[in-house]
Picture (cartoon, rainbow, N blue to C red):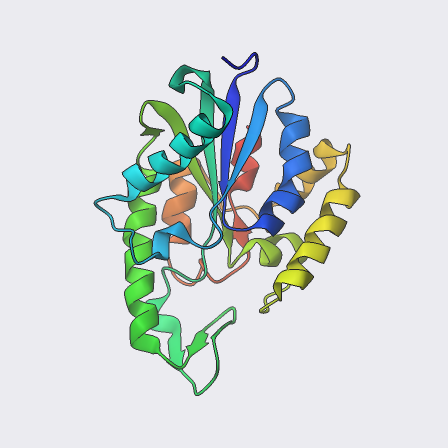
Length: 224
């Protein structure tokens, strides 16, 4: 049995944990923070569907329970942070003879548009289910977004960074806000950065137009 209540934080990569870990641990100092790094986007995995996504999320939490000997009642809540990657912008996908996928504020370029449209459709459906869920196996659950991705929100740079570049940027960011969680909350709550409205309204906003490509986040709601 944990002496502190546990907050599980699900993120896509190690750089997400590096950038946000110390901030969340400082803010939620009365709880025990356990990060779950997916190493990718769980919403677009081949094994993930709208029918099994809740069980897949629950499996991630089960792995934390087994690793540390927690019980379900030890968990205070689950925070899930995802990149939008233009998920609601299928009409902005442009076919280009390039490697990988390139994101811009008004378009997405890829060599395989049909594949990307299929993945976007899967992701959009799953995200809509997740933000409407509220709980995973009885534990409070909220999913928060960064658009187009974490680096775009934190550094105002929309490009394909290498893993090493992401790691260096994340370390610098964490160092900048070490012991200054109030400054981070002020940064992440800027009017031109936040998706407006309540939790549900922020998701309704990001689903519209090209907002899932543009620079928006609702992470400020983590600290409400």
